[in-house]
Amino acid sequence: MIRLEKRPQPSRALSLSTPIMAVLATFIFGGLLFAALGKDPIEALQTIFWQPLFGDYAFYYRPQLLIKGAPLVLIAIGLSLGFKAGIWNIGAEGQYIMGALFGAGVGLAFYPLEAWYIFPLMVIAGALGGWLWAMIPALLKVRFGTNEILVSLMLVYVAEQFLASMSLGLLKNPEGFGFPGSRNLQQYASAHNAELFAGSGMHWGVVAALIAVIFAYILLARHRLGFAIRVTGEAPRAARFSGVNPARLVLFCLGTSGLLAGLAGMFEVAGPSGQVTIDFNVGYGFTAIIVAFLGRLHPIGILLAGALMALTYIGGDIAQSNLGLPAAAIQVFQGMLLFFLLALDVFTHYRLRFGAAEAA
Image (cartoon, rainbow, N blue to C red):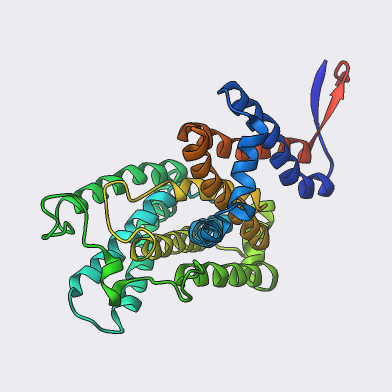
């Protein structure tokens, strides 16, 4: 008989090595998946992980690592604060959308005025949009004890309907010949999140992601609030005895994660994406959950995990065009990372035992 026995203390060695083991397991089973689809698994993995960095067109793909990685890191940093405290925001995708709508709405409201203050106002509006959307599950949880997982997740679908409505209505380009979507913010200098250095991929969203990593590290390592977050997640009863206010922590964690997700959406719609469209959101809010856990909810780990996940996005696109891999296969490959991480995480807290259970 095989059973799981709880460890007296979680294994630190396994906790640190689990992300690496999860990546290796993903390589193995991802290769089997590609083989089942009739593709050479070695070639597929090489295309995903080697070509963007060292291939013939790496000079084009390397800047894309910053462009793809920045929103993932920014969102994942916010999510990690709540996850550490046992507060589960699963609706970052909706907050990302609302941040984009608020930010783009402010920018387009000033069109065609050229002024330096338009982009800063868009940044504030994007952060506010994500924060307000996250406050809905936060206030419902604090006031009525609702489940923030369900509420935040359901609000994603509401946000998607808002996105479609804005693309077809209020934010629709009046000069767009009837096609859905807003004006292209890349063509509006005062509202454009342009590259800081041409061809580098570095824009203000990347800067914001790096700042978020630094502040999250300081918060968790040096600040009393970070201590409260860690204690609440590890020992809720001890947190209550130490004077932690659960309601304030819920509001802070959900609000911060919504704010950062809203910023990510604003920087994306004003930069790489360029406009509000029906299919603007590409799943960054959900992928950031994988990034947060793959990075062990640690700011530096999240930075590295964001780079890895961005690499799978870029390499996946190359594999689709060069090898004919379906997009769904790439999404399954990305999902394997979280699956194996969570599966292997079990052994951080439990060990396998063989034989009959001991009599009570």
